[in-house]
Amino acid sequence: MASENNVLAETLQSDFEGILTGWLQAQAREGAKRTDLVSTRETEKQSRDLLTALARASRDAVLDDGFDFANPVWDQVRETLEEITESRTQRGVSPTEIGVFVTSMKRPIFERLRSKIGPELQGIEDMWNVSRVIDQLSLYAIESLVTKREAVIERQQSEMTEVSAPVVRIWDRIVTVPLIGTLDSFRAQTVMENLLSAIVQWEAEVAIIDITGVSTVDTLVAQHLLKTAAAVRLMGAQCVICGISPKIAQTIVNLGVELPNVTTRIDLQSGLEYAFKRIGVSVDGH
Image 1 (tube, helix red, strand yellow):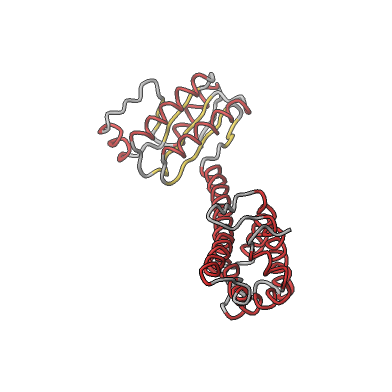
Image 2 (tube, rainbow, N blue to C red; image 1 turned 120 degrees about the vertical axis):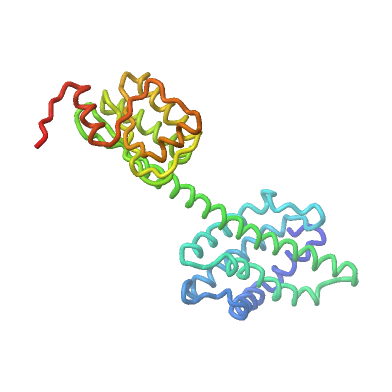
């Protein structure tokens, strides 16, 4: 049963099919009907599903100054919007086009409101309340899109971080982390976590951190390297930092960062030679 003075519910109930047809036409006029990305049949289904959910919710909703789109009565509308947004985003529909898809619903509804509004002032209030509902639908659709994209970006960043700090088992009891590019504090923390896990997994006695490909190191990163070396020692292994360039060496000195009890070597070859001696393996070079 429609709540008192709920002109939206009354309008949708009285001419649902007419409003749906008008909305589909409005989508085509306003550029929201992307037949190259979403089929006409699917567009009609999505539009019908959303309009149906809106009609059901509006029967129990209160459209006044206390209107709250987070109210459970709108759950089905929000879920339908999320499904439509996700489907259209995967097909390449832009955020603007998704917003227009929703707001183009206004015209066919407002056209029918003209014949239903009461006194002039009340009619204006009804139009305003309905407009707020549709605007909220559009905003929620875009918010849903942004949330999903942020989740994808966060997952991709996490995956890239894992790839950017790989731990390689190069010999029995020897692991190494070859680093290339910028080494910021977040990545340095990831290096430590991955390295400690690898020491446990492979029972490593020597852990080599090769920073030959790292261009710059700041104070925080230097401190992270020290903490990593200390953590490796606590795990019963020896940490070797190799590939420190002259530029990075000068930076570390200028920053006043000391590297006590940290084994360093000029390059990876020297680091490996040290590691082999450490575990008692003799490797003849030719």
